Length: 115
Image 1: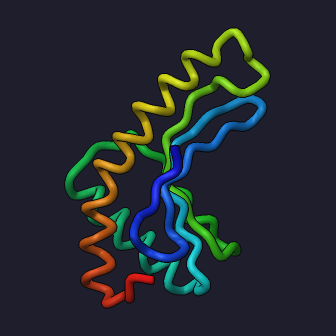
Image 2: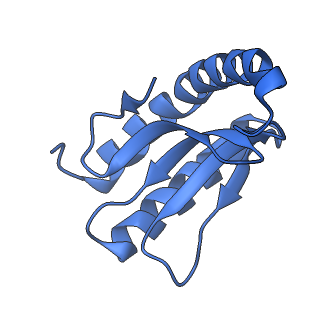
């Protein structure tokens, strides 16, 4: 269910923890400075076009950044796995449809090279 963004170090990922599931755009190239620039530009473009459905986690002090939407169902909630799977499938599609065009525009404008 993971998806490539077309850019090295940037991926669309489903994440399942003990207590939550989330669909995320994870930005972790080899450069912390590039990651923060990409993140900031995506957030700026998103805020011009959309409301606040996503959590933008810049993770200052760390190299990576993430943008995600989550749900409070985790792998320990076995009775709710069908709901978690349904949430992840819809959330991954929406995440990709929302952020792939923004990411492409940001990368084109930053002059980043497609790995």
